[in-house]
Image (tube, rainbow, N blue to C red):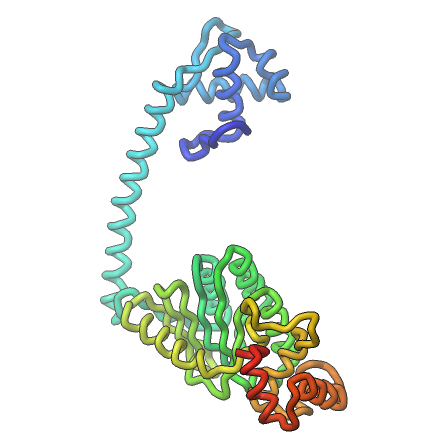
Length: 324
């Protein structure tokens, strides 16, 4: 369709197409319009009558119609729509006050609410991720309540350009399904790190809302926009982030080795698990390979780094930018 859409003024696609055609073809018959728009005569006639009702078209004769000039018809429509929006905004303010009054009467902190149950929590996580515009930070510890729909919503946010920073508690790496998810998330560009332990589950969206949850048998979370609680949650995340072990080196320009014999993504993940304190056997299970394969790859990495011990490998991997 040529030009900007008039849907914001309440016109359907058929109404807009017909109005544009009437503007381009003055004093037009229904049959001619039907041929131009490749639509049935009856549908065109019904649409024209709808436009007449909106003040956008007029009869010239019983069978000939013309458009009303945009500077008259559309300005009137726009004025009506602006008045509707103004009324809606006033109503929004009234409803918001009713909601906040009810929350206060129930003892809730202004801008905060409690959500109970796994399904309810997954739904709210999906909503928050769908609203994200800049950055989502998460502290992730067991039990994991998210599912495929939550992961899909997270992936959609990444495709919109939202930055994700995730810190997983190391004990979660014992689950092969979670490890597969971690690898897929890293491949999508999410920044992932591992920490030995995490005190609480947290999700912070755009530094404006936080979801705080305990790891208990019956899932319950606090969702808050209270500035102090959001900043407290963000401060906790930013305290843990620098000391957590990166999952794949986080691919910053000039730090990840490519064709010159430097580690590929699988080896970078192996290094991250090694630095996180997992045994060779545990790493083999997480990566879905044999113990000998892990030991051989560690030996190859030590040779590539020019070191003799795993402690030296960790230091050289950090220095060379294989992990950060």
